[in-house]
Length: 79
Image 1 (cartoon, rainbow, N blue to C red):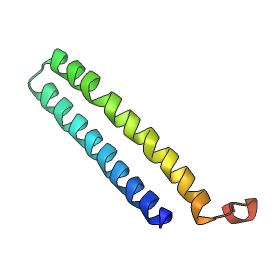
Image 2 (cartoon, rainbow, N blue to C red; image 1 turned 45 degrees about the vertical axis):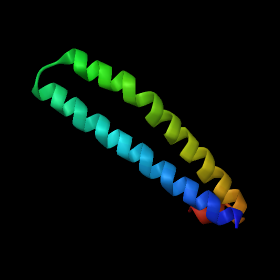
Image 3 (cartoon, rainbow, N blue to C red; image 1 turned 180 degrees about the vertical axis):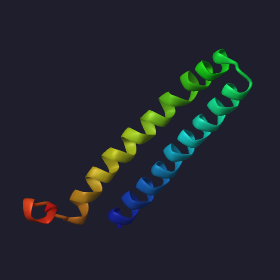
Image 4 (cartoon, rainbow, N blue to C red; image 1 turned 60 degrees about the vertical axis):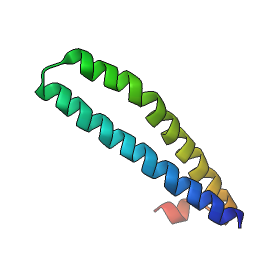
């Protein structure tokens, strides 16, 4: 049960931070096209704290999910 909850949280947080990244790039492209440097900077300052926080959260949940599922990582598996 907890495995499904962590997978759901991981998927949602990953989708959200990737979406925020896409929105950031799209808005900065618009700012570039209209040649407004202040707009580009403001978009960056507004969106990146949320995107970075969600990215870090997804990374921690993914790390915990690996332990919950009981996956073992060994040097042999990496080669």
